Image (cartoon, rainbow, N blue to C red; front, side, top):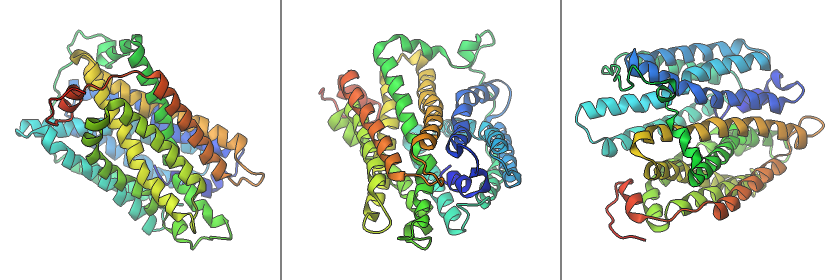
Length: 409
């Protein structure tokens, strides 16, 4: 996810017209598959197949797609191969949560207490993958896909040893397609506040993809500047530096109960948007020499930018929706951020970079790119501040974080 752009723009595949738009389309396959695959695999796991077996099969197929990537020599073919990989991979995120919840509940564990310390190992795995990719010299070549493929095959085989998670059959046989696909939550668009919330979720989802897409290749591109060169620490260890973002993510999760208690959901979401402005703005002026601290601070700020909207947004959905459609509403929130938002962020950014921020020799004008992204995030934050109305109800919000507080703000 983090280094595919570094690979793409370093390869012969980038020697085409509008490479940014081509890469934007390739990266958007993550979003496209998020729109339909989680719902489809959810139906399969609910009705017909043990969830852990489906999880294993999907990872084995995902690994096979990754092993094929080194054979690909053109951007169009890479699009279809990565799309196939994402169709297999993206539904495993929700499936892994579902499997964990099923096993923990069956064994009598308190999911709220036990699951977060387990889930944090996913973020640690993300960091480890980035370090391995960087330290093995794989960030700009196809070895990264071999590393990912090996991990996917191991995980896929391991999945078959997990405790059985048989179909729950919670969807009735007579349920319509709307209920089966979890689309009941779309009626929430009829409420002004919820429609506005989902719109901003989409806009923030677009911002999230920008650093995932371009962060590593931005740092790697400093090698083309004679002032820094390929031996610069920032260039050499760009992926490890980017992993500070994930480290920050694990720390900011711990601060969320305090911020929600003190400021409420709306302000916490606004903090997230302003953090995106800082994230992009610091990248715009950072460099491997006197501006190295801006790059580090930008990576630290990412934790607030990512966690504060995703977790407080999920909490907002939890407190504002009827229990009968709550699961569907959470799915809709994810669809707007990781689906539509990510798709728009991928496609539009690729087009904009090609059209306005690429020099005559294909070099990218990174400062202007990041400043335009910062301007976008600032506009979103200002609109959110004035258009989104939400009263801070401390009792409800703290109940859903598990905190003990009985005062009303």
